[in-house]
Structure formats: C-alpha cells, structure tokens
Image (cartoon, rainbow over the protein chains, first blue to last red):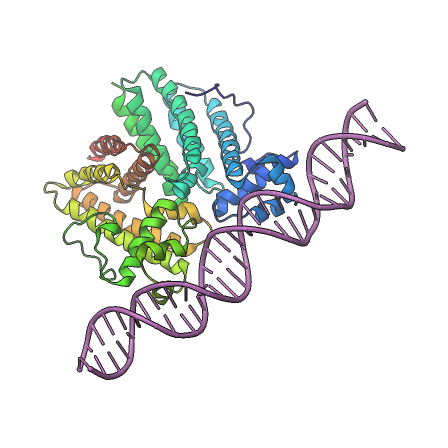
Length: 206
Length: 206
DNA sequence: GCCAAAACAGACAGACCATTCTGTTCAATC
DNA sequence: GATTGAACAGAATGGTCTGTCTGTTTTGGC
C-alpha cells in the first residue's frame, strides 16, 4: 500500500515553515502552507500566496498547474515534514514498545503547545472539501496509513492479541486529542489522551 | 421553531434536513445547512443556497444580514437539531449512568452509519475558519459545552472521583470517533471508541 | 374583498478569483 | 561576453462572488 518506507533523518520542526526555502518553488510551498493551514484552503487566494512568497504569478503557475495541484503539493510536503519531526522525536525514545507508544502523546503535547498550532492539515482539509475532492481524501488516507503502520509495528512488538483493533483505538485517541486541543487551545488534552492510552494498553496486555 | 430554549422532546432526525421547512426562513436554513455541511462553507455560494431553497435572494437577505450571519444561524440550528436527536435517543436508555454513557457510542454509530453523515458541522467549521472567525469558534464551544454538561451529570451519578477529567477523556473519545469515521467512512469506529470507553470507565470506578 | 407585509424574479454593481499573457530582468553556463 | 532558461512585474480576461435594488406577485389578517 505504501510505495516506499519513509526515512526520517534529522528531526526539524513539525511545520513546513521551519524549513529554509531555497528555491522559488519552496518559497511558494512554504507561503501557501502557512496561509492555507491558518486561513483555510478556499479562503486563501493565489494573490496572497505569491505576495507572501515574494514570487511572480507566472512562477507559481510554472511549478504548479493549478491551485488544486498546489493544495495537494502543500499537503504532501506538510505531511512529510510533520512525519519527519514526529517519528524523529519518537525514534529518540529508548525503552520498550509501550514507552514509545505512550511517548506519542508527549510529542503531541509539544505540538499542541506550539503557538502556531493549527490542528492537523489533513483533518482540516477533509473537513473543508469532504465529498468533493478525492485527491485530498487520498492524501489524508496515505498520511494516516503511515501513522497506523508505525503504531502496528509497536503493537506487534508489544505482543497484543488484536493489533489492528489496538491501532484503531490509538488512532481514535490521537485524532480526538488533536481536535480537542485545536478547539480549546488547551495542549493538555494530549495528557488526557495519554492517560487514556496507558489505561487501554494496561488492559489489553493479557 | 428553531429559537426556543433547549428541550429535547421527541427524537427526530439528527439533521436539519429531516425537519419539514414551513417558512421561507426555514427553507433557507435547511438548504444552506445541506450545502454548507456537504460542500464546505466557503465553497458554497449564496446563489446555490437560494436555488436549492427555492427562494429569492432578497428573501435571504431579509432574514440574514450576511452570509456570515447565515453560517452562524445554520450552525446554531444544526447543533440544536442534532442535540435534540442525540439526547432524545439517550433519554430512552434506562439503566444506570454507566449504561447511558456507553450508549453514547451506540447512538454515534447510528449517526456514522447514515449515508448522509458528513462529520460534525462544528469540527468542520472550526477546521475551515480556524483563527479567523471567533463567532464560529464560540458556537462550537457552546455546542461542546452542552455535551460536557450532559457527560458530567452522568459521571457525577456514577460517582467518579474526577468528573472534569473523566468528561475530558470521553470528549476525546467522541471527537476521535467522529473524525475517524468521517475520514474512513467506517461507522464501526464508534464501536472501537465504545470499547475504549468501557475500558476507561471500568478503570476509574474506584 | 382589502391591504400590508412578505416572497418572488431577476438585473445590477463592485470586488475578487484563478488563470493566461506580454514583456523585462536576472543568473548561470558555454 | 553571449545565450538560455528561469524568475520577475503586472496587465488583461472571463468568471463568480456577495450584497443591493427595482419591480411584481403572492398571501394572510381584518
């Protein structure tokens, strides 16, 4: 299902904005990412993107055939950057599998506590486009698939009986924490979810 | 009809679309709700609303001073209708408090399984407007407050030590189930969350 | 049946939007 | 130094958007 296993080298910031944009294409991607994720995809115009990026309009349309393609490229880049940061942080956790799983929620807490936190771009994008655009939904599916793959690997190591169901349960806790934190601007929902996860993992360890 | 204090009498459908629109204002609200929630708020134009509602544009602007006001009215009406359905269903559950709490996820399952399910309008709206619009955020806050109030009442009856934290935990499970079901179009995430809730409630019953 | 309020139909204005096009300038390679 | 490709600036286009305005028709209360 996943083309190639992603490699996550040095953990940088979770946002695309933390990566220094070298080429004009990068500047456009970074500017578009910031605007799209903070103001909404439909609500952000091309003019605002090129103004923030400091590029010409023709340059944008040279690199991306349409706004829709730009949106998809932003989601792709944003997801890759976020996963690089997220799994990079988790790779630093040494200890048994359960510790790594629980650490997920500590990393989430750091994410939520960032003043620039705007929720998960994929959740926001699917909420905005919903039925209409399938490319956006597929991008969100791929992103979630990466997460589930990582979770399942830890759960197998943990030796739980039903890996698939356990991964689904953790995904519910993660998504719930993201949405609750986004709405309330309260990062401690990560810790609430963390306690929930500990309780759950204790219960399924036969 | 849509502007009375919150009582939850006979459970109707969860969607505003299930209420027969009597006045022109109701027709506009119902049409706008369907379009906004399925296609997105920004992506839906006024012309599409009046066409679906079968009203004149002047009628819409007689009842709602702007599109933004219409959006807020839709959220208010949609939230009220949904809560009427949701709490109405829960009121039919007889049994101890724990049964009522667990039943939340069965009702959620029915919601998710509806072919017209489009996620939670408030989650979608906050995702779309985010930082920009505070009225939308406040509407979402009020909606969630209603839910938390109900949950806390049950938890007090259940006699849990930390009612606030328990309600936060349940809110995380509910939000997570909604988002997961919306993305995957798989209603059984409600049952995954239900099992999680049972596990959690068992653990906090001293 | 009368009258006033509301709803209808649709044109209109002004702004904004995505996209294309015409040139100009810059930077790096041969 | 010449050439080439990329980025720049910005105008033009065709469409859509919100919101307003002008009339006409319907409807409900007396």
